[in-house]
Amino acid sequence: MIIVGGSSSRNLASQMAQILGCRYIEAASTKFPDGESYTRIECESLDDDVAIVQNTYPDGNLVEMFLLQDAVRKMGARSITLVIPYFGYARQDRVFKPGEPESAKVMVAHLGLACDRVITIDIHKEAILDYFDCPHEDLKAAAVIADHFADKGIDMVLSPDIGAAGRARDVGERMGKPHDHLEKTRLSGTEVRIAPATMDCTGKNVLIVDDMISTGGTIVAAAKALRDAGATGVSVACTHGVFVNNAIEKLRGSALDEVLCCNTLENDASEISVAGILADALRR
Picture 1: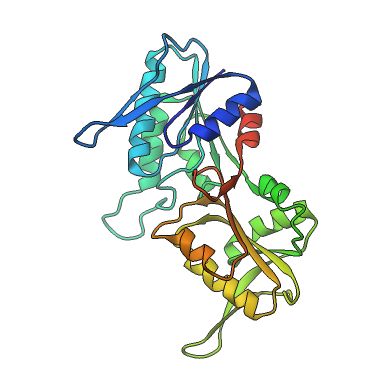
Picture 2: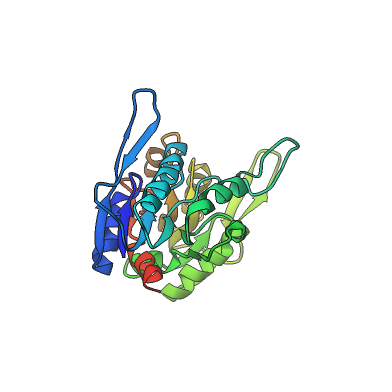
């Protein structure tokens, strides 16, 4: 197998190749003066199974993925696996207002034109993958997050809301720690209480887990509420650290002790590697 690393995921792709003991090629990527993307795979041919590791967010990375697919196919790849650590447009999976597109379905239709299988990690809506005509698999980052925090003195694992309670349960059970979800209770017209739905966090070291953090506002409010409720420590870990509008600075300046994410999106908080679970999936 050959691992081709796109510009969004070079470190992750390189780690995967090292674990698998296979050839790694870093795609050359740049922009033309008018902003259009250019990419090139600098080798003679690709007469092997090829895995392209590249995000489809933001838009420039999506275009690069399309170009890499075409280049790999033309260079003779026996099969093409798309490893998409962070799948852009996954939140628009249906029409919410008249005149809107089904963005996720559109992206799948184009990505599926030149691939034999697809691997994602904690995609926002897993049902989106069923639009692909080829085999697909969504991996879960719970195991690597649990491993990272195994010796950090965590007492309980929380999700920001009941919708993500399954993720807190998965991480908590792997760590052998109790789990719960945060619940908002309106106390008055202007006051809202945020606290664990069923458990007491007094004197506890708490880990909040989520699939992604974008603006970070919900997590900042939750961390403050947990501190006010008596938690001795509050950390947060997510799979995808999107961190828009200076979110990482806001999070680090809040009541949180630690802000970490996986390296699906590479930034200075992405200390938890998913390379191992991706390599295992490629072996299978």
